Each structure stands twice: as structure tokens, then as C-alpha cells.
Length: 102
Image 1 (cartoon, rainbow, N blue to C red):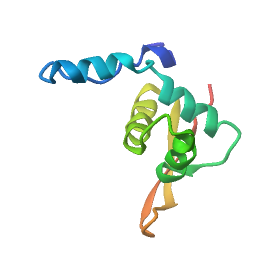
Image 2 (spheres, helix red, strand yellow; image 1 turned 90 degrees about the horizontal axis):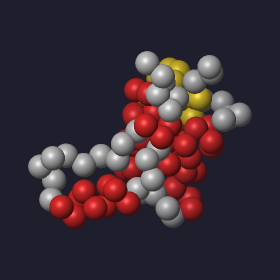
Image 3 (cartoon, one colour; image 1 turned 135 degrees about the vertical axis):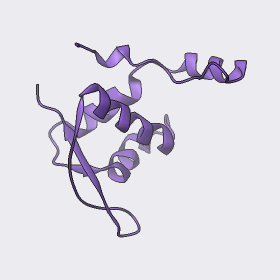
Image 4 (tube, one colour; image 1 turned 30 degrees about the horizontal axis):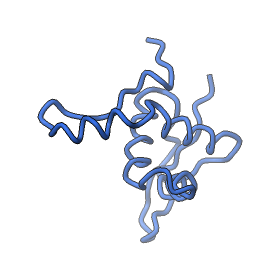
């Protein structure tokens, strides 16, 4: 299945209130994933914390949004989980990610 960055729909469950659907619709589909892929390109494997810190630096996205977008980017095949050799802010082992090569 061929999926582009912009096929990723904003999240809003059917049971969410109307305001949640309005907020989800205001998001540009795939913009967080595009920002993640753009930042990771040309860099070595990075942890979710490192990615979120860099991508959230402009104040346009929340950390939780970026963390969720990383998982979605992996599922869509734009980002690959490399290994579990990273270290979280608390010093625990965590996953590292890189841009998936075509």
C-alpha cells in the first residue's frame, strides 16, 4: 500500500465532543510527520525525546503530539525504529528512530 505523508488523518474519535473534531480539523494532516521526517533527515538515530525537543522548539506543536506522530510515522513507514540503545531523560533505555530509506 502506498501512503503519502498527507494521507494521515487528524485524530478524533467518533465519541469525542464537537470541539475536539474542530481542533483536529484545524491541524494540517501530516504536518507533524513531515516536520519529524524533515528534522531526522541527514541525522543519525535519535530518541523520541530528542526528536520532540527539536520539532517542538518552534512552539507550533506539543510534545505529546510529536510523540504520537512518531508512532504514526513508524506505522506508515516514513520512520524506522532502529534499536533500543537510546537513553531517556531519566536514563532508561528507549527506542531510537531514523528516516526510513526508500
